[in-house]
Length: 410
Image (cartoon, rainbow, N blue to C red; front, side, top):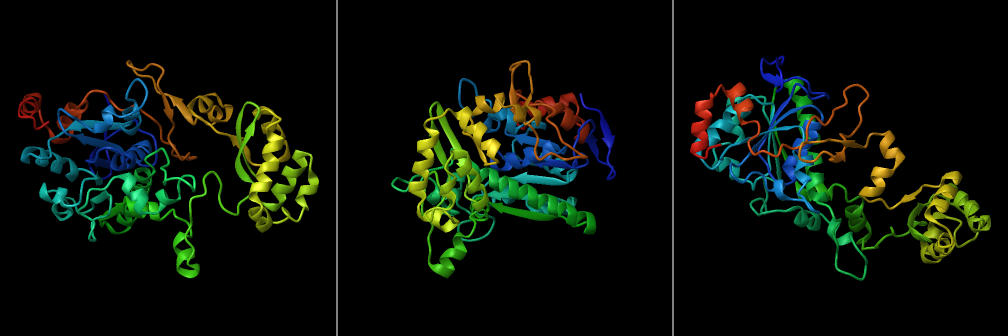
């Protein structure tokens, strides 16, 4: 199915991939979102990602999603070679140990201490593979008094400070509607792993990347900590707006809603021209960033009064003509129909026998020399690449694989 070539480290790596990481192999032991999203990012950039799932059940993501069918798996497992191994059994642990010995990286997102109980600690793995980079994603990190606690993204988002700021001020803290904590932790883990690769290129040394969900959220919390330590200021929920940043809100039109962000002085002047009310730019209520922030409700009311008399298309045309940042509130249908998404190939067609019209977001970011690609969606068959991976990398024959299958090792 995939031709093999020799890497410069004499390891077998699949050819035909595109991207900057085509000479890198990653063994993915995680499940759900945080670990697998990091693996997806690596696979998108061309890495040979071997995803290990428990036999019989597989990754729970196989049945996650909304709508009529669970389709999340097709995204989070794309570009990965999927095998099965029972990590609770010694034979399964040995199989994975041998795979890791031929890998550049291994990623796991189990509760801290799990890998150690399985005999797959970093010192044990590095003894066979000194340059190994181990990526560990968890709720609270590998150290500290909370490290052994179970941790999901929702808890990390709350502890990291994001949950408190989400939602309307007169209601309970809300959530983003996406597992943003998991995605942030995976992204930081990927960044750390790529930095570790650079270090290994210079020194030959591998290392451990410890990425916690709560700290990943904490790191995007802007100046919330400095503001409290210096001014005793605690940010509060502000709903659809940011305090003292105006105008920057969602406004009602005749046929929908539209977002306008014109809080900078020069941009606000252009907005006033587009509104046909240029005098607002010099009005003492609105003639500075501070003044607009203090009179946000009044200013939003004036803008909303103007937009409510026009359609979304009319407002959009006027805003673009005036050079004012503005845009629609998109859902999937609007994304698929938008010509800019199409021109950028932001969403691509990834047909399968089961889903001939399947589409998903493309590989990102874009790279001018070594762009990655979606080579295949997540395979529906559990253990789809058992024969390929275990046969080609570990030299197991059909009879040996069948025996392991009978014993529920794979």
